[in-house]
Image (cartoon, rainbow, N blue to C red):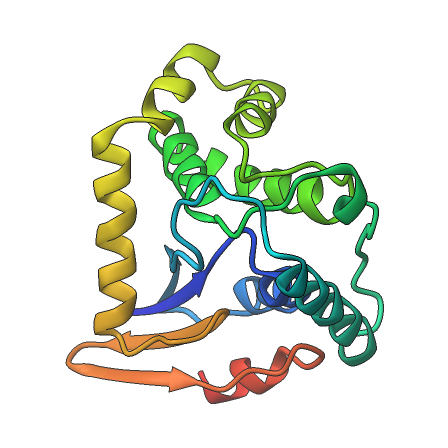
Length: 200
């Protein structure tokens, strides 16, 4: 049994662009290969507003993605409505907190965070946004809020970040196939998921 690791961050804009391709890869996996999500942790906790230079850079990344991956939607109102922070660990911990309540909620929380960030101009660096998303998914709000701030969930995130580092991952999204003692990094194309499927 091989494991195809998808190393990602729910607030990584390139991961948002790769989402349609990843979904097609999962649906097309050959027998004997199990997909597994692994949080990479793009940016650690920070309570300071994002510097203007970085805001301009990230807005530019969104525009680059729209050119290179046509059809990827972004709501640029985020940069006016919210106070951006370079902090994705809260969103990563929210994915783990959702998973702890129900494994099926993991993907739902990832998508909810992405939609909030990229389509609804809401800030997933804020705990309240994450708690509101959890409630909308039908998760237990009190348990989610407690887990989100817990040392156990933080330790779980750091464990996943360390596992990604051991796999040699330095960028997101990344695909790594582990088959027995063999570990292979798979190149991917945002517009052609068949590139990965052919290699598998």
